[in-house]
Amino acid sequence: MTKPLSISTLPLLSDSVSKPNYDLEATGCGIVHIGPGAFHRAHQAYYTEKALVYGGDWRIHGVSMRSASLKEALSTQDNLYALCIVDNEPETHIIGAIKTLSTLAHDREDIVAALVNKQTKIVTLTVTEKGYCLNAQGHLDTDHPDIKADLVTPETPVSAVGLIVQALAQRKQAGYADITIISCDNVSDNGKKLQKAVTEFANKTDESLGQWITENIAFPCTMVDSITPATEDSFKANVAAELGLTDNWPIQREAFTQWVVEDNFSGPRPAWDKVGVTFTHDVSFFEKAKLRILNGTHSTLAYIGLLLGKETVFDAMRTPAIKQLIQTMLKEEIVPSLCSDNEHADSGTQDFDLNAYAQDIVKRYENKHIRHLLSQIAWDGSQKIPFRILDTVRDNLKAKRNIDLLCSAVAAWCLFVNNKARLNETITDPLDSMLRATAKSVDFQAIELAKKLLSLETMFAELSVNTTFKEKVLEKVNQLLSILSHENSNEGQQGSAPTTLTESSLDSLKGTA
Ligand code: CS2
Image (cartoon, rainbow, N blue to C red):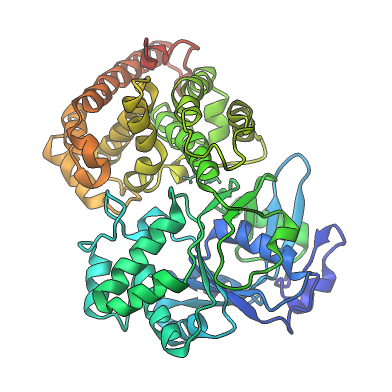
């Protein structure tokens, strides 16, 4: 039987696998990470692993807010795991940066103790968009069930915001202000939004705590980037064959990785600057460019690709009509929304070549080694679309630029919701039951559903009453329906599946302005 990966089996690995190059047992924790999913393990933990070579007690205590599956999976392997770089030049790294894993339901006291510990100087978070419990205006959503519960019983929080406030209250008492709280999620102005959510929560329990947080605790903004598909069973089997050891939860990512962090810390940090992390005084332009160019087109690919029967980003990009749509969307609707952004003229971003950046991202989508499921990217659409698509729509409406393809992405999401509801399949989205009930209430009529979805204030904010935007999305729903019925009838005639689009199939979605 194959032995498990662990500290004692590390010497069995071949030299081609990189291993922790510091004293694993003697190195303590200095970071608490909330939400240790695949992205954290492939990104921040990777940078921290490299920085550990420069010394310091900077290992990570990972905290899962809900699921115990990671803690269970890695418990038999000393929390070590393989990170595989799947690209033209593959690499395998064993990451040892995560020293401890805890879950809120089982280890609440240990988690709070770790957050309050004097040695903890950094808290990082990857809790996804929904984990911030924000309303459409970017404030703490006090109607959110988790926030409501935490305001009633702040000593047993269930939200990340409530947990951070609980720990900061104790750090205030102890006089330990030297801690920096770093959001690593794809949320625009992520640090500022987290700071707002935390101080708004704190003010509701104790105003002096809110003030102490505002005056002492830094919440730098960040831009994080690396494409990290979820782990599938076939990948696990390949990793076991390569290592000669079992790993219950290896992870993979592309070779490209980037982390830009606002240089605003309340205390010390690992040697991240020596291992490729960029520190700058203003992250917002990087963040906005990445969210709109990468995540905006990713979500578009997901909803349009799934409608057209594609499975992965690679498959979708191999379809000329879809690739063309993405290129046009970048050139005519997304990149211009960033070029007119003069706010950041002094932040060294004037030289940023947005077109080259966009083309590099398109190339990354064409990485044949990555199997990135569109269904994974389609998760949580109600939470992602506002940051990825709607802010660009707002800027374009203001500047009287085209919004046709951005609205096509929103229209494709409406059809995606309708299809899932009709098939009675769960939608991975916090609004799942409401979305499906709405589709059912209109008898799965796509246009009627789109009208209802577009009036959701929580998702569309002021756009929920913007006639130009709403009419454009409805026009795109109609166009997509007619493209789909045309494709399906062709398919029927030829008796072949799945649909193969012609180059011009999606042409009608493009604007004419
Ligand atoms: C993707 C992102 O799943 C998704 O929604 O768009 O996770 C994307 O792969 C990363 O942001 C890339 O940095």
